[in-house]
Amino acid sequence: MLAQMFVRLSDVRFIRYVLASVGALAVDMGCFLALLTTGMWAAGASALAYGAGIVAHWLLSSRAVFVGSVAERGVERTRQKALFVASAMVGLGLTTGIVWAGDSSGLDPRLAKLGAIAVSFAATWLLRSKIVFRA
Figure 1: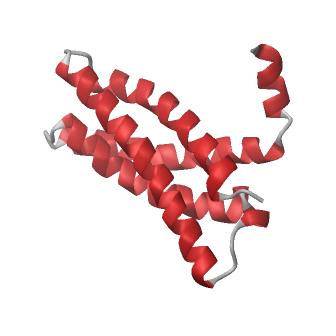
Figure 2: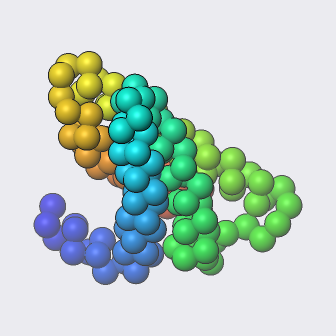
């Protein structure tokens, strides 16, 4: 497992993806915490905040991570954006479900969100690197 991690770290694209994810996560968490302070339902706040993170992640991923495999224009670009959104919906579903389950079972929604981040990150990386931005 540790050896696989070091191999993965040697993949510059993966490192850029991690950095893009950190940027999108900052948008997501900032929105999530702000919405929680308004008294909004935790799962709803998580879903809205994740949506803001999706926009940030597309901008960062298409401009800094998968630069060589972003479709130029037209149908292929629209298809790629649709696949990106579909991968984001998988992450959104996982995130919202995990936050809802944690909150419903009495767990602090911020802790549930942290667990959801790890699961969503892994799922969207696999989908985006293997399907959305495949060479």
